[in-house]
Amino acid sequence: MSDTLYVAFPASETLCQRIDAFLAKMRDDPSGNHAADLDGITDPFIDEVLHTYFTGPIEAVNARGTAVNMIMGAMKVIRKAAHGLAGRLMRKASVEEQQALAQHFSSLRLEKDGGVFVGYPLPADLAERANQVFESFANGEGEMAQLVEVMHGITDGAIENYLDKTLGSLKLGAINRGLVSTARATINKASASAVDKGLPAMERSHRKPVVAYYQSLLHRFG
Image (cartoon, rainbow, N blue to C red):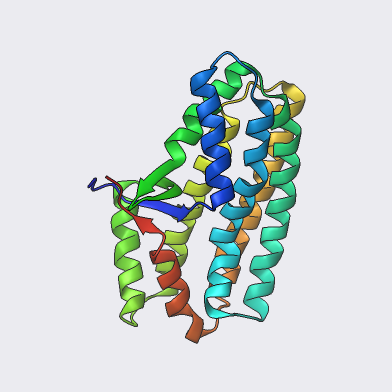
């Protein structure tokens, strides 16, 4: 098994089937237009990424209150921007762009113990830091400033791998580049707000189980 630590979530049956169908068609007919299959990935992909980072930890502790309102508000902003952008761009992807996207989704698709995951690797220094901080919270000794620092690294990685690298597979004109830049700024601001304001506002009783939830997303793959 690789020493590389990934942040990854188990893909739903729907997402797994749609990714695999798109990849299979690209392998069997690489010069064909499979935009419809690509478009079918978009909605469940965005929704499952957002669930993993936002609603998942909230549901893990059945949290309510100010922190939840902050986090859910940020998620709604990100969802609107992400779905709007993806809907505009993915349906028009050229065959060449579809080939690049197939390579990208193939890199995000991971397998472990017979299950399919979607995830990305953490840099070695961030992986070590995340393990240290998560373990300190598990032992009741965690410091919020350190958790915020680690979660910024993890969410920045999610934006890079799920947004930047996905859209980086597309050749964008000036108008679409402007739309992407605006959407990315919106998503980045909302994500940072959820980390900077949402995490510190958590009730103390929720901090340990929420951190345990995020720790459960760390995996190694063979």
